[in-house]
Image 1 (tube, one colour):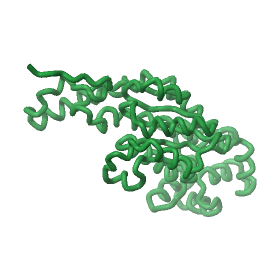
Image 2 (spheres, rainbow, N blue to C red):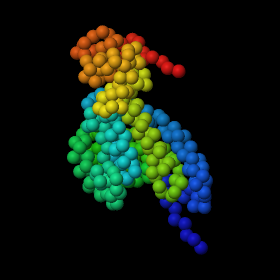
Image 3 (cartoon, helix red, strand yellow):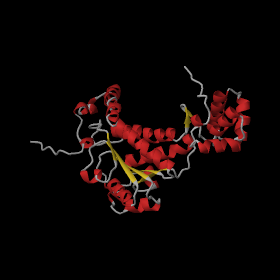
Image 4 (cartoon, rainbow, N blue to C red):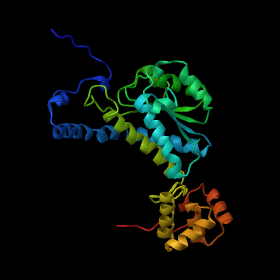
Length: 307
């Protein structure tokens, strides 16, 4: 007789639909995984209002001069670091504005640091080293909802007056929820491979983090329509994108856009305002600052519509 040990964490349960996956041909594996992955957006959609709350919290944090911190272990921590690292090239933000903290430090990004998530003092040290304080927003990421590193990090954040949220794919214990202002719990169900939360839970987490940072950046004026206008041309690809955006919005040739960007010190947003209002870089900067950085509050014309 086989004994059955049940785990309360949804992400650790066996998936009845994939119990024979080891007998499947490659195409069968693909089909099984696709069928499971299709359920992820619906799970995320159940949390739409709380994700919106997190966007609003991040927006108010940024407008108040605070910072957003993602905190996690393993896959969850890596996803937080990934999302944070994408903000500067996409939105022209200071790297301090959105930060990822992973149990085990930088080494854990490429190699598992077993046991790092169980050190109950390390999260306090890690957050203290980043200067987490009142006015910041700390988002814990824990697929299973039970990671000790994340729970202690949220507790510390609360103690210093920071706002908190958790992104999980299995219901967190009450002691974790007690430290959380905004619980985002997208139940993605058992994984294709039992306990491998880099799969559906990881996909759901990535979707949610995408929404939090992108939504907050849109709200503080980092886009004009759906164009990224606060990027900085730090490589050839971004320089090309900057020129194309300025040319499209302002109705200029590529050469004219390049010359305008030279006058705006490479700032797409500044170049658009300068051209639209016929003002200097200094005047455009003042107008944007007075409008909280939002182009639509400075100029009347929307960006061109395509399609």
